[in-house]
Length: 595
Ligand code: ADP
Ligand code: MG
Image (cartoon, rainbow, N blue to C red):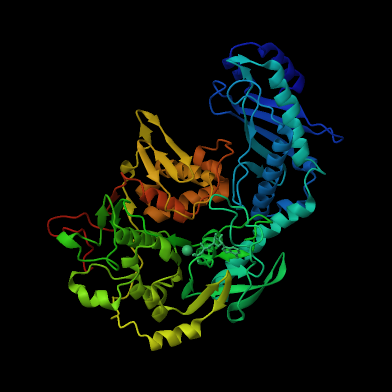
């Protein structure tokens, strides 16, 4: 480790030279932090940008835990370390903002400091790593230049003054607030505790009284000010005893089939959206800290135009025109209904046991065929067994619950265990009333009695069909929350609503590369290969997906989203797994003997 005097001297020498000379910064430096503590941090320059307009340089700052004054309890478990890291990353980001004061002199990204501190959710992310001994912040900085000439003075200010001040104002004792830190940890721990507890309570989700569900706008995750807080109807009210917050009353949504009904604009989709995000913990002040959903929930929606390969959608769709095989369904452009069937089966394959459906984003012919349509279009020529006839078997045979927003498809009253009516953003339980209505106004539709359901057999993918190369160079990157580039392919993830952070999308790209390099798809079927990649990241850090490089911009995705991304890659091919004989003339479909 070189001294800060050496760093200062180097910056003097670099002043006025061509930008590439910044390369000499690479390595590790002592960096005294301002303040009474006289703490010395280690500054690591991991990657120096090639020019002022390129992606900014990657830096790390490492401090011994004692220097930060963090108490032992804050680092005692993996989850606490995640929550503490999340909290400190946000403090660091705030310090960047208060320090910034419009200072971006120079060309390109000169002087810009940034950290990937995350949004409304608390995720396992690499931006700030906390261990039992050290705190390590990973951030980026644009090394200052005028044109392509190094600005030595500005660089000295950046590295020897601004960065140390930002670190001191976020990581040293007095800079962070023990009560806020504790609240952050409690939010993460209570969420995890309740999520683990839900199955024992026979619940799939919990919404605490007082929760604020609506957001400020369609493009913001900040809570809506002046919103009506959640108030549980007594019929579904439960009290839980959270380890941090203590006794909390709220709505427990039971396993089975639950409908959310109500007039337009009365808060139905807002509730469902909060449940989609409830698989993750939320930061204090978000309003959804005590909205908790089973972690295997999946927002099921229509996605026409998507590609599908080798999915057994036969429980929902069979006898397609032209004799298309729906036990291994392939299409370059699915319809609304076939995309929903494929999305559902793929979600089950990836472990989903709770479906979240909103009529607004579903294909209506996949949801229900009413009595009139049944009379007009004979079953013999209708390929679809609608969800209304499978939603109970899904629960009975597979233990898969459903929460569904219904505005128009009243036939669903016949299959619901519970009905919640949203009225002026206030929930009421109307299950009894719904039963009466269903009895008084029978739907007259014939249940299209299907066979018992089975979980799909996991597919094996052909690793050669996932090509990360573009013109000889490996190119896998997230361009956005909703888009992953893999080689020449652009993977559209806009229908994958459980993805909440672009750093998750980036991590998915890294995970796919990792799984390919490790030969996981050769050894294991798709969900098991991805579970293996996740296990490695959960024990060794997400950096394991990038050969241990200390990057600061990854956040943990769930297996469901990992799988969903791969399934949307347009080149993906499946192959027969080892336990399936290869297809041959006697066995054109490669079925196992006896099946
Ligand atoms: P629906 O799906 O029933 O048609 P939405 O859930 O889309 O209705 O909600 C309609 C509008 O009401 C949205 O702008 C939403 O932000 C707002 N909203 C939802 N819940 C609340 C609430 N609890 N308090 C205030 N406004 C709310
Ligand atoms: Mg709606």
